[in-house]
Length: 270
Image 1 (tube, rainbow, N blue to C red):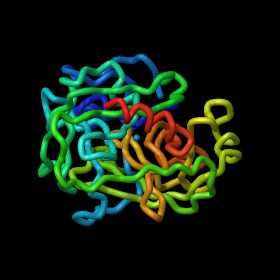
Image 2: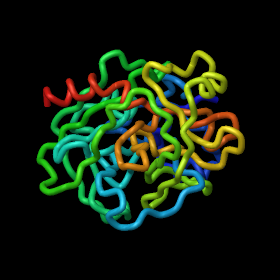
Image 3: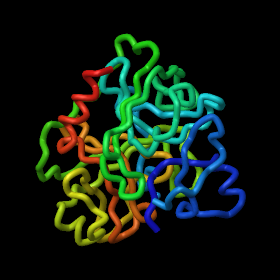
């Protein structure tokens, strides 16, 4: 089953009910963040990863419910001191007051909480196809002195080994308290089209994962988080996949290089 990689309900309650990762429904997180709606059935968590060292990925953020900031449901990347780049399916339908941003520590419980003043969802975003799955979040106040993540301008490249980062669910089925990361091989457009057919849009998406063996991937709760290159630029935004870390079903990401002009044009308006 095809899923985006946003956490829609509080993971503990779902696990207690004995449901697996593929059971999460797509919905809008807002003031009632622990209620999921079923407006689609697109799956994101770090599978096969390891804990990040303090300061290793300082521009990584989590999105949380403003009504319950302990409930983080998506990730993101700080691309300016007051702007986060994330996935459109993480913010669509939410007002600025519905979401807060958590930043500043690898332990999610120790992060600082920042209010949001504005949300921009990509023009042309389609929650059914996941085309143009990017969004910008403007913080009410800048995080002074924070490190930011540069965006790639490369629209076509064999990236070799990439790294995906997040606080999403792990093999145990629960959200990770610690920031995790895992290296994932770049997958060519041809191979990704072979896996997903017309569901893969080579004009806006990029794939990564172990196509033959599985075992490494993002998953629920990692949506919107960064896929970075070995030289430390943002290549992709966690978007969707079939299950998590399954052989033959790689992770699919919004392709930052292909979307660069649109993202930077929107950034200039904030």
